[in-house]
Amino acid sequence: MIKPNRTLSTSVLTLGFLFLYIPIISLVVYSFNSSNLVTVWAGFSLKWYGAVLHDTELLAGAWLSLKIALLTAFSSVVVGTWAGFVLARMGRFKGFTLFTAMINAPLVIPEVIMGISLLLLFVAMEQVFNWPSGRGLVTIWIGHVMLCVSFVAIIVQSRMKELNMAFEEAALDLGAAPLKVFFVITLPLISQALVSGWLLAFTVSIDDLILSAFLSGPGSTTLPLVVYSRVRLGLNPEMNALATIFICLVTTGVVGVNRWMQSRERKRMRDIHRAFISEANEDQKKAATVGKVPSRLNPAKV
Image (tube, rainbow, N blue to C red; front, side):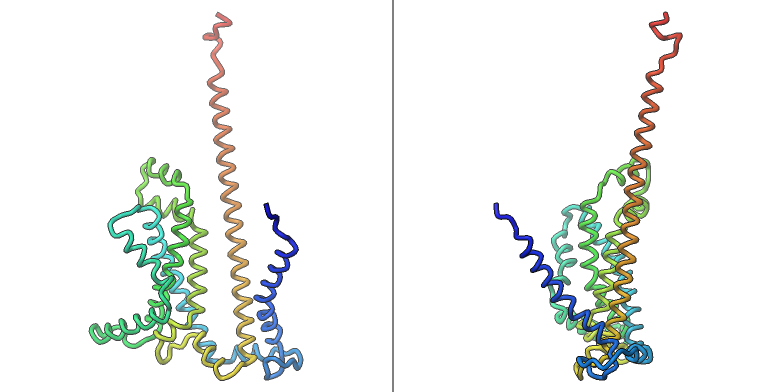
């Protein structure tokens, strides 16, 4: 049996992390640079953060991207949860293969193809139904939901397959309706998968460039489109400040959600442990009660 070389593995892993994170660290450092040149250090300054906070175009793009990302995340969780539930629990029904292919298609179809298809669809719908009137928030939101539903459905499907069905079956045996079981029992048990799917959908939506480029119109420029249009003209230290702000916000959000999920998991494990202990104590009490025979019926005293 070949034993892995720990020194080599550690070195390769370290080089990989350095390759990924040194550019990010340098970006954060140079966001405090007072020079107008991105790669020339001229002293510590916060002026680029002030420039970001007073840049109306960037702020408008960030606000639009945030609204679309929130709408996309919640919509994708609703649709993707039902899709993942159907894939995990409904078995191989008629049309199962087609349904699975439709759910997984956005994962393998290039975004350029999706963008062109949706653009042609919206143009045809506007000509026939007079809706949507132009491209903007609604069309971008629909395109992002179409892209993100697949991610949420796969996460929920994998969690549902690992879920112990005994809790749901017990609730059904006690007379609860299937819909109530789903909302009261199933959803809390897969809450971590829902949070993960929400975060992934939010991240994909707020970061998307290709679909937004096809589905946006005048007055609906998202933040990635603003950044891309400016970077094409040359690097600007203001972009470093903007990226640093996003890194701090995302890091804070991920750490906070991770701590919340860990506390939820610890609470769930404590509740399960207490339930087992309570059940064991009840069994001991019942056994002790059964073992106590009344003296008038005790054969030793008859």
